[in-house]
Length: 237
Image (cartoon, rainbow, N blue to C red):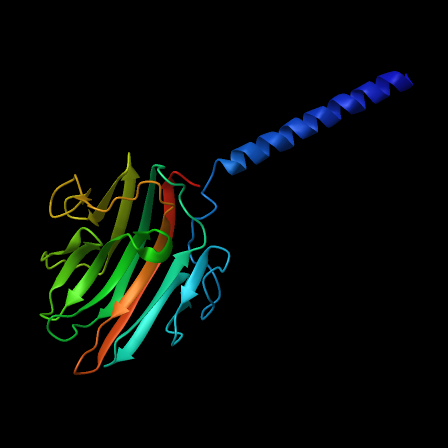
């Protein structure tokens, strides 16, 4: 009888361990550990585990569970967070981030106020950017930029206060997209092929940066914008 009881207990123990292991497997198959919904108390900072922060004037923090940047004035300013982690060199991956605009005033002519997501290597000697901006002529545009791609804006007069930005690395080629609510598709300038960046990231580990840039302006301007739901869709390191 004693041997029977011990055998039953042993089987139950193995069953419990198998169940626990199954739970861990299911859990590990969920969200990438580097996803960030910027959940936290108002005025708190983004996770130091996930991001290195650069914000001299403390204008960027968590507000209503979003990463908020709010600044009014005439001086140039900005803030950013850089991933503490990287995508492995030569790997395929995809990231998306949501943006929402409360106020995005126009700066001086020839300048832009913008919200961007950037992929870059160590030292930022190679980088690619896609973003949403307001230029000095008061036009709402999309923008891409890079060390080899140069600077390209799409004068789309966006006219929407929220949207999504996307970067996809596939077989060594980086492509940028924004979400078009009207056409219900990812695109760049109407093309579902997106914008193909010219930067060569071969053999480079890649960081991700979320950034806000406010240009100098003669009159006081306000930039009150948010980023949220940063998601590693595929290729979680």
